[in-house]
Length: 296
Image (cartoon, rainbow, N blue to C red):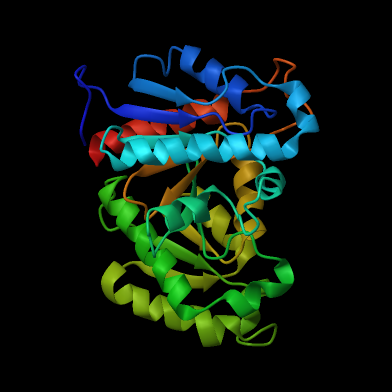
């Protein structure tokens, strides 16, 4: 980690879509006693929500990406240690000409030439990594491969060990189907894809278990039996996570050459500009980025 002259980590925050709550939660978070003295901050973007700009979604999308690209240039020069991103709106970004845009995660990986990466959601007692992300439910099974699952396991193991400093982390893998397929009765993915991936990953990662029934495994992890859970698709992991940590959960991109965190909520256009947005998730995203920057 390269620190500033103050000895503190250098954190870039992009404020996201200017017509969402990103500018507000950023401002509130930086004013919080929990945050303001933790690091040297550089904010890229708007300081206030531009409510009227909702009439021009393509301009909002364009600005969102300009903020992000500027942050990437600064990080590439070695002038910052980590990145915290406020929410953007995928439809607005696509309207601005980024036709294949899927989200921060994929864009950051592409721009940094990162081949192996994943989304990890971090709460006080639960960490969840996704194998597939923004994929229609009907396409999930076809997208699951043993390589993708073992990669998600490997990345999770590495981050738990190297960044969260857990010795011999225990990782649980959720099944795809009800009752984890029950031996192939309710689906073959557990037998043909997930179990072989666990076997491969176990050779290098050690304590990897499953596949477990999805309706059981998150509760077991919450009880302390596992340090993280590998979920097969977006809502399988995000429903239990947001049920528990909707206000203060954190989204990470693991695998990038730098630490990147973000709040786990969206742009919340319905409350933007009203001064009522809760900054808790942004506060925790900043605190985690600083903590991981110290340890990287």
